[in-house]
Figure: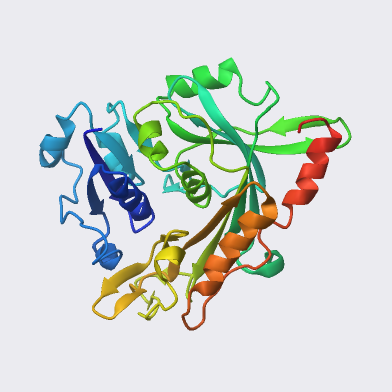
Length: 341
């Protein structure tokens, strides 16, 4: 692989840059919003410009035919739209024409799309609601990937692949799904393509070492490492109620993080953090410390690892759901009843 360019609106893609650098890639990272430059300081080398979509500012990168681009900045995605290895964040348009991240459906059938065909099919089950029992703001409070060896052909059709290929889409694909108990049929929604948390966290964490780089280059891999992967956001206030307006700026406090030893950090995909002389601390941004992960060939093992990692972090006012993955067993009973497992 040549250069990898990661341009993140805030800190949402910085953990990907870090993972790719650990896989030996030449990663160039830029945070688009200057306020978020403090994220990952002391942990990850970052560029200090250009924060513009004028082509002349990106001549070096636009001239590189082997460049891999990961971004959630619409203007940068448009700038590199001709790149053969462009992977963008999922987005949907609001009534005002703004691009926002789609809300993850409770159940989706998902896959990796390399620009021509689907691979690595898996179910994604999302625990909506920031707090236990689905209470609080309606954001993903946890997620579980269940690797699917056999998927009904109606989920990933030739027509689906042709449509996505015509759009130049690549990367993670989700089809929101539901099962109609009356008609006994699956209802499949329109595809959502691109990076979005917590799907991206769970998927990348579920890969074997080095496989993330291979997928970005268009190579096939053998499969996901484990049958189950569970992820849970770990935060302090004000997450998920991050407020920034002309009248008010509400940011998280900068706090030291204890309990984040090497073993814990291997299962924690960091976000609003930085390294100082005193060690790891929050960076004083939106309060999302990171996403705790766990994987295993049993659901209980994956949950144990994810929740154990979340529990090991020592910081005042820590927040995370302890009931993640609670709907997975019921969903599997449904699949068994309709002969899909």
